Image 1 (cartoon, rainbow, N blue to C red):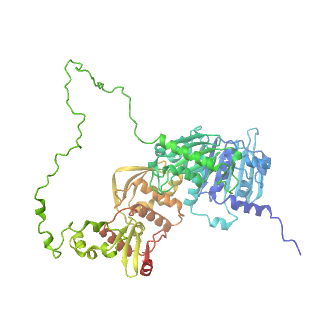
Image 2: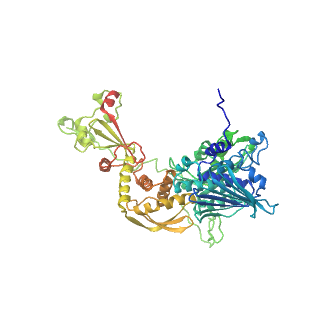
Image 3: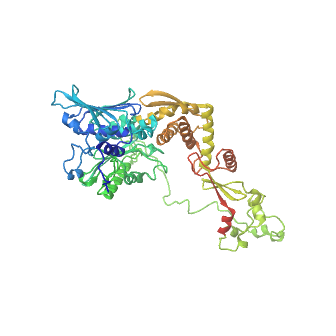
Length: 628
């Protein structure tokens, strides 16, 4: 029997590795930019065409490579950062696997031009699908210039499952932001289809300035510094003020030793001090940088290295939460008392002497220090001596006359459930008096609101329970979808336009959905640099914060895959409906509940909200009877 176990060819092995390391164009940019940072570059330029599907170019002025290193860099497990196994536990660089370039070359066409400062001439290398096509000397600048073309050209299935250009571009910008926020001392530029989206000049170790350059000056007003230095770790960065909270997309970043990471456990440490300061479900922005001994963390537990294991996780959690609490307490927004009296009028101090500065006697005030106005009550009502006669004959009227409100036994109002039913039930006369002359049954409303969240209505099969917020979302969503289809929308002009600024990643999404938002009635003016003036909003949304409204729609669009007009229409309509819908906790009268129920049942889909969540639940009469 022949052997069945055999080694895979390098080309196949590289494609398998590429499935872990290179998932989309953003992965290519992440690996190449990280390598440029490790090469000591002071300037890194990134250029993409068609969201990286056509080409990706990364140019740096780092130390470059020799002709031999340039060739070896594309071999599997080739790296300049590891010499022995122990080095895996004391890494201080970004990339180290030695699979990135080999994986990229396995699924794309690569051209590399590189030169070291000590060499007079550089090296040009061309690779396509793991095959070296050409290597020759070339005149080029010091550093490295990678050109990646036709990503996944030889893996059609992978290329087929790439998302729309908007989605891929959004992922690229997110990956790029995670790197530039850590290295303010490096000059970064980013161009898409020959349009410059970012030009981040070096600003030393000024992390705050880099954050402002990426996300806009408006965020600067909402940042509070955080800082603590212990033997376990050093933490520095910024947290947002409570008023900067958002429902989604609040720019939350953790970095450890210059590497972006996701850490839900530490996220809880940051958000815990905000629990009583922001609405439930909202998030605050934060940019937290950890400096931890390399031997105390493991960055090799995930292929993309975004999940990191800490040795002293619980200790760091406590340190982080205490630091955030201190920052919130130290920089709270309570206005301080201004004791600066320069230029202020002189207010004389009270002089306790018998005469003032002009020689006039100070008038004396007589008062009784032991007087207490609560000791006596001069307005106590007097009791008439013949008060018993006022009630003569009251008992003789009997029970045939209708009782007046307030004449029934007060003890009946405070009887507990432990008393017999006959004793607790009010008489029909009392019920009539309490309800203005009509019986309780006649006065019973058609709907009942439970805890400001559910509308309860008796139906033939039992008790119908309606989620009021989801019901209103469904009604509004259907209306907005119809407006988009009919291309009809009314605009309510704003007296004072509001300015909104997007990060590069959000700006890409916003430009994609802006035409549909204009159709609904929004009015935008492009101010350049990712800033827009909101001059109007759809009619009927008066009272809503226009900036929060637009941000919520963009955040929802960022989370969803937007590839066709149908998806864009759905996302815009859903985001607008969610913000405009009746919130939980809003008290509705019976007429409002009746209108909402009628509008819901006129909808094409009564049972489910646009996001698939249940709107209506029926508690059957049988189940109710079983409870008793």
